[in-house]
Length: 256
Image 1 (tube, helix red, strand yellow):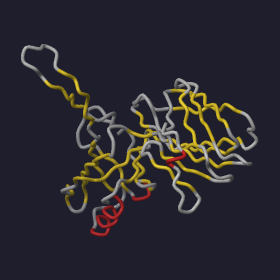
Image 2 (image 1 turned 90 degrees about the vertical axis):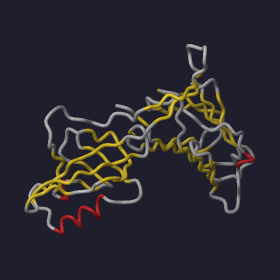
Image 3 (image 1 turned 45 degrees about the horizontal axis):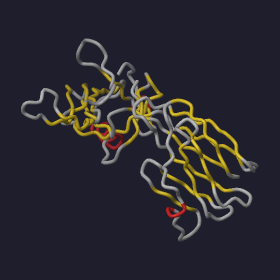
Image 4 (image 1 turned 120 degrees about the horizontal axis):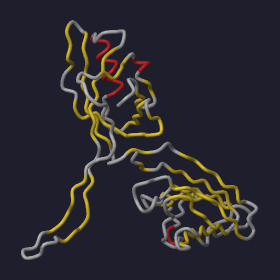
């Protein structure tokens, strides 16, 4: 990574008096994408194997870090360990590109290389995906006066998969009990609910395929047309039927 500083779990390395150092010469290495393995079956007498798909590997990267002004005292080691070593994924950004987020766990940090408390620690981080992620975007569309249809635009900024499945929250307005989102950019694919309650709010995680209602003890899967809301690459034209307020939460997988 080109920058000497980074942000881990929302905390800057500068505030911890810790910098990235490079103990070898050469070009700067920056995580780009995880590796892929081709899954195929070879058959005797057939030149072209049967292709089944690919298996993607998550990204791993190693950083060498050293205090800028302080030294590796026991107190410093304790402080850095408490900050960087966890058993759950934490956000990571390099200051050289704040538009990319990685979610990482430190998986290796055997030794501190030092003399008289001066030196560096080498840590290997494993990410949760074969790519980075964009910042989180929240876009709200107030269609509470939409008595017929209205068209909104939602962008899919991912350059990886054919479709992106965002999180969507829909608050019904007026006397509306049904809602339809028709993606005119995806063959008029419809995402819809019918038979809801006036004023109800539903939250849909389209990627993980679950639906929550703000009404107690109510399950809305039976009211759903089973077409999870998805976006094609670029600008999507979405025709909305029904009075509502829509909030779309996106964080795009990206390779850049």
